[in-house]
Structures are given as C-alpha cells and as structure tokens.
Image 1: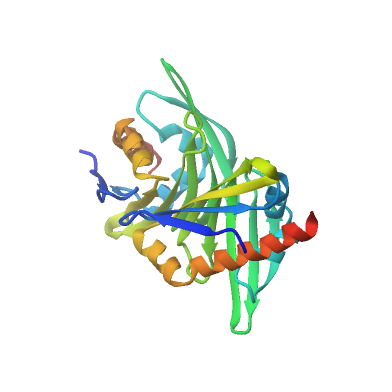
Image 2: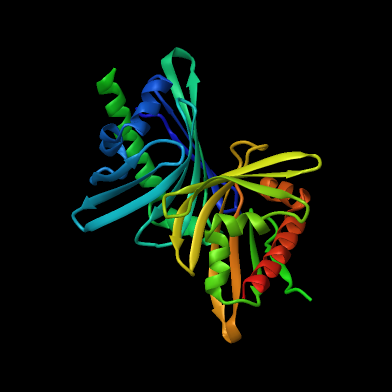
Length: 158
Length: 158
C-alpha cells in the first residue's frame, strides 16, 4: 500500500499544497530529485519515458526534460531559484506546450522518525485559471503515478 | 505630470496586475531593464542607492542587487526564467530579509502609438499574506518612485 498523496487547494486562490510521505530517509528522497539519472526514472505519469535535455542542479541553475508516450512528446523547463541540500528546492516550471504560463514550486524536504521522510510542495500558479487547467489536465494522476515510481526506486536503492 | 501607476489586485488572490505607460519607445524601456548600469539608476524608492552585485540578463540567468538608504541595506535576488527582447521578462524575486518568500513576475513590454510604450506586470506572490505584507511594506511607493526616476532617465536619453 502506498502513502497517500494529499493535494489541498484553497478555493479562489491560485496555489495548492501537496504533501506526500516516503518510506525512505530524507537524504535518499532529496538525491532522487537532485540526480538526473534518478529523476528521469520517476518523474511524470506511469507510461511516459523521460529524457533530460538540460540539468544544472544548483541555486541559479536550471533544467529541461522531454516526456514521450504513444501520443506525442511534452517538454518542460525551469530555473532553480534556491537549492538547499536535503531541505528545500524553489524552482519555476513551464510546460512548453503552454508557453509563458510559469508556476513556481517551493518543495520542502522533512525528515521523519523511523528513517522516513516527507515532501511538502507549495505550488503557485500564475492565475486561478492556470491552476484549474493543470488540475483538469491530470496533475493529480501525474504526481500520484510519479511518486509511486519513486517509492519503487527508493525501495530498490535501500 | 507623470503617467499613473495602476495596481489591480483581485481580493482573495495572491497576485497583482501592474500597468504603467512611458513617453519613450519600447526599445528604450526594455533597455532600461536589460542594462545593469541603467537599471541601477531607477530601481527602487527615491532615496535609495542601488549596487548590482550579479547580473546575467538572459533566459536561465539571474541577478542580485543591494539598496542602501540612511537606515540600512536591503538585498534582492532572482533568476530569469524567460527573456524575449522588447517583449517579455519572466523572473523570480526575493527580498533576502524575508528568506524563501519568492514571487514571480511576468513583465510584458508593449509598443504604443506616438513612440510611447507600456509595461504590464503580472506579479504573483506565494500567498495572500505575502502579497499583503509587500503592500504594507510600501510596494506601491517603491514602484511609483522608481518609475518616476525611469521617466527622467528615458527623457535624458532621448
């Protein structure tokens, strides 16, 4: 049984708070966000294959990746405003198919007892409409399936 | 008489739309945002002196500047998510005195008739509270006085 994905969006605002626990230490959870070879194995919905086309994981750096499924390909890019190891990533996020609609995520990494950990992501969209559009495009499914792949990756690593 | 600064914030949201016209062509207006030697002359409230400590004006780049008045110094930094010349800047913004509270601005540059131009800035804060805090800290005065200095700079250049 996997840990639940909790998405809380206050109606009328353009942001959502996403929390998810993991049965792995915070250092392993953070590494799976920092290392492109690990990151590409879990990000996105279940059936998609991810290729990292740019990766510069540091404060002031940036990233870009392309996901492919049977229907086509989808590219995403952003910049890293803040990276603090095992603690915090603040980054922008843009789906290139919807240009100039840029969201910003503040992803906190927390250590829990018993070698477990938690992600708390405050995800801010450019408007209420942009948040609603992402929700209707399957944001919840993409995150849920991605984190389930991350569970498997963390279990295989330990 | 200067052009008015218009700040529209929809109550209950964490974003504000800021528009301002200028009596100068869009190319000159954009250059005053792109060139650090020009930028430092107008950004911020009237009495402050600005020093640029980092400037990499390109998509994927970043900036940092420090402002000083009689009371102390205030540092700001961010990353440039998108730069399109004479058209668009999307950037993050953080006041280092309030760490990890990061806003994101999408600043559009528009050409108007008669050699005039307009800025339309969609400014998104991390929460309703963060927007209210910036408003109570004199966001309006800082922008108004900054843009008045920019008026003078553009008039002197032309």
